[in-house]
Length: 388
Image 1 (cartoon, helix red, strand yellow):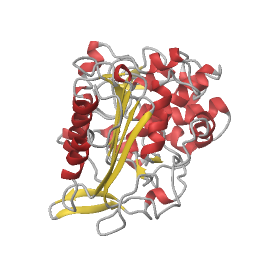
Image 2 (tube, rainbow, N blue to C red; image 1 turned 45 degrees about the vertical axis):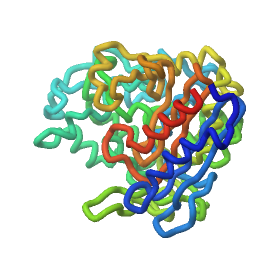
Image 3 (cartoon, rainbow, N blue to C red; image 1 turned 180 degrees about the vertical axis):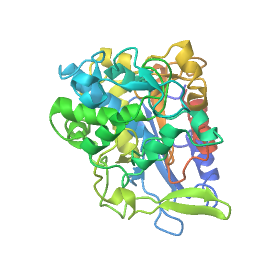
């Protein structure tokens, strides 16, 4: 076991990361590894194709890596007594207090039944509240009516993040409340929407805007000065690239959709951050939550919360892992007990308490599929080979 961050011993990590960099592969990335009190961080490539070199403090759209941040803030408010995990959300979000549920997920919006029980805060955290993304909706020969309705209402919750699309918070939650649930509360795992609803719920519980909840409960205590729902520091901001038939194309430039304040900050996929900021959150969770959570809250957040039936409905997204509170949990194999989540716009975050280890990979290339791209897997494997 390597006890220090000896640069020579870290050479395999550096070599693996550099191998993936190129204008037709991954234009740029930052690797950051936390091991105990030590850190290895190194940038590779460029922030934009043909643009400035990547820097350790470059900024990225972390998309779904926002979810663990939202989960952390939820537990922080619970520790203050402002909410409890098993309370019905209707007490804070009356728009969702009496949901109807589709008889068939792909059926007409009018064909519904009553919900068998109330949705709880825990249901939102575990993505089992009844509304969200399912693989079947993207493979259906005809769009599901509920998906079409969500698109017409500009909810931006059943597809890639778009901070320009959703209306203000109050309009958004009212529109969501006008739709039926796709599944009964607790019945199955459905991706994404629960964390966006949490943004509304936390704002009401704390009586302040959601971005202020994150700032006061997470960012300021951990000195996460680079993390917000937009950035004006365009010299540090990467582009996001998507693969196309003729190579990579710009999906969002530095001056694009994340360079201005959104109308409804998205707790599922809205944040901009840096590798060091996400390392600060990892260190806190490795340290039993201090100074933002207690160890019991961290334990609750990082254990698998899903039943076998719920796990079966999540396999396409989770690939065999479990789900804690707003993040995945490795349930078997040599990395069992590790937790974290990935951002489909190009980032990944894995925290392994058994090894006092965190691996953060920030790139400016979008994922090609729900699975973790090869560059992230290769870097993780190299880190474990060298340090674990």
